[in-house]
Image 1 (cartoon, helix red, strand yellow):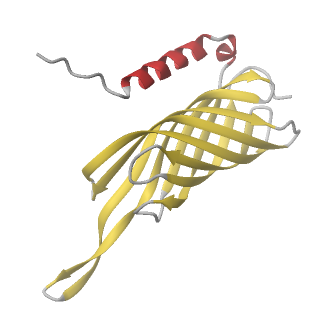
Image 2 (cartoon, helix red, strand yellow; image 1 turned 90 degrees about the vertical axis):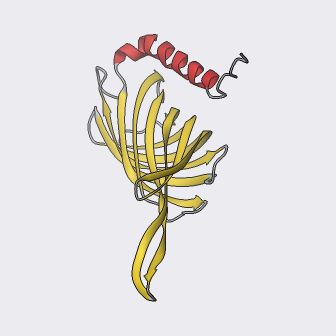
Image 3 (cartoon, one colour; image 1 turned 90 degrees about the horizontal axis):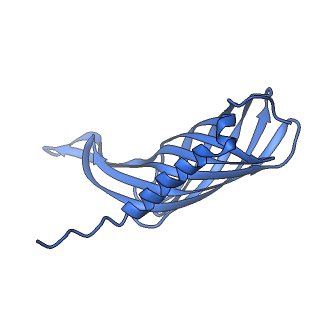
Length: 199
């Protein structure tokens, strides 16, 4: 019997899990992460459909030194849906959904912020695995897994030693699939779970 070739994504997934385990064993991990929740929308989509939708994310970020954090982020981005006209017996019955696309995945997130007492400009870089799925009214048509990278700019207002809120705009590019790149614009809330306050 001919052995089956290993999945192309297996080495990347194994390395990703190993890096997460290493991060969780570092002294910084025991200080407690920053929890960053984001809600917003997708736009500037290179592909069809391209009318966008909701964008959700949740990240756990550990401090590695002053003003720098690294961790993992999960996300789900709605890229939009196509519609067509339903016609029966020569009568136009209105629009119906013909194709819906979304992407979800898990990435590393590295970010740095400029020192500031209240307003904190932030630069973020992400890289990881993306899975794009096409469906029609919930019935899946197909999916594709790809590598992806992103770069973001944000501005946050510190509300207290443990809480801040702001906006983040991220550009994201996928290595393969029907959608190659898009933007997300999101409101982000950050909660610092570790001991002590920010300087």
